[in-house]
Image (tube, rainbow, N blue to C red; front, top):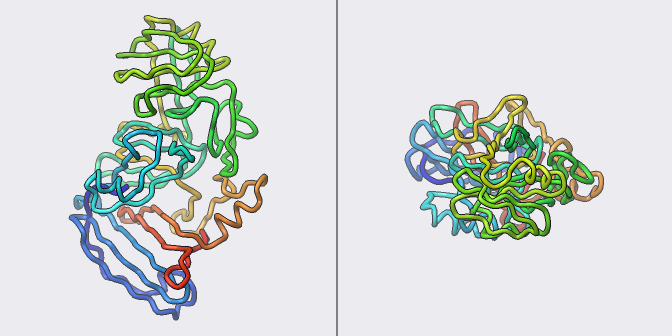
Length: 348
């Protein structure tokens, strides 16, 4: 979602800058300033035809890019137009992938709070809280852990159903793969997941051990699943070895340390310093060169060879995010699947 502002950009230059069809095709552009630091460019290109919308956000001039969670919680879906109205945004676009129940798939952090762990190695848009720091696109991995009673156990997930990992790319024994795979929902019988009120009123689990943490202190250790999530705390939900860890290291009265970190390569990414982290993929450009990372980010799964053809290599409507060399953020939509109006595009 885009919430807030941005600036007027220069009039469009040569139509050849949009490499859709022959350079000789007619292309028309119009640009308007919609808020301080935010401009909106509409592009109509013959041939396909194609209709493209570009929001250019200059954060140094007051433009702000932020995120909005559907229904103000993880569960459930909501139209992006309704979310934009609720946030009083000047414009909004889709932000990342989600499962059928509305659960975000891949990295999502809003206002410095992690709401979904990365699909390991997939690209994400990172927008720092400080507008003087540049936004960027980076591949992320998860570095969550819980320390208690002199022991430590990695965290497998945040704000999702324990044991179910849409698009895979998880940690510590996920089956059938720990690599990203858009065609699969992986499973893991041994997981530790952190759940807050943003997830819902209950954990929606079956079995395992769940530690109820309020004001930093474990107030109860429950068995059987589907534990109520306190409005002023979190639940640490564990199965198999994670259940044993909670039983032995996080009894009532203990004060576990919960760390929900992100890594960009080998470097830690302080989540609290990010206004928005939103995963997507595959990455399309690296330093201005076309590099469509379909296989590395799980969009060319061997188990479903038709997925690449239908998603990557076919013309579809698209939502894109990028960062220019000068630091301006681009949010782009391309209409598709509407013959005579807009044909959509392949990822290359």
